[in-house]
Image (cartoon, rainbow over all chains, first blue to last red; front, side, top):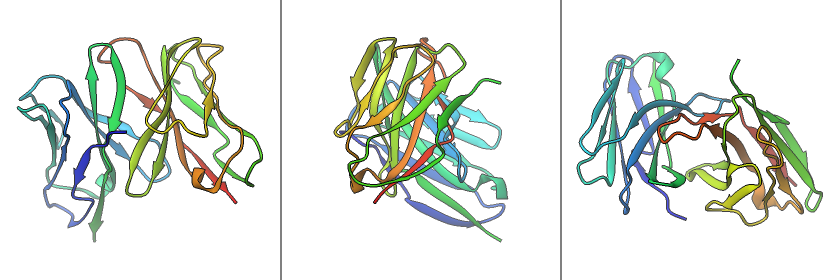
Length: 112
Length: 113
């Protein structure tokens, strides 16, 4: 089955730094989603994107739906300790196709 | 409280011993799905269900079965577990609308010896 390529695989940053991660696919998606997974928990939706070129913010988080519809980006500004976790992108074709394909994840660690 | 409940949270079993992981949601969601999470591979979909008595294979369905006899429940069945099915499993559900949010359970860590 298809998987999305997510990078970087892991990040070690200091508190206060900005974070960028991206997700690429060989196929077009009509919906891009970004999830965060805290240790010992299931993923929780952060941001949903429904149109090519769309830029959406959720507090310090900003995500973009790539123009080609084959990629998406997530930025976190001024990171704080609770940002630690694994971030997943996910894509859905939509239009009756309910299958959601997840990226391989980016593990974010904040160095004290 | 709206939630997806999985049981058990942790399970250790032996090769070949049939097991069932239960999943229940209290949001009257039509869509339910099972994923497995493995290091470096992210979340991979095992099976999903669009509604009662409607199930379909995801990306990695081999070795798994599901059933959807009632709207709220979507159990995952491993008829003859093998060590390569050792993984962290998540159940998820969402409503029927195109832009509905996917809710995840807290996960089931399965070890097959």
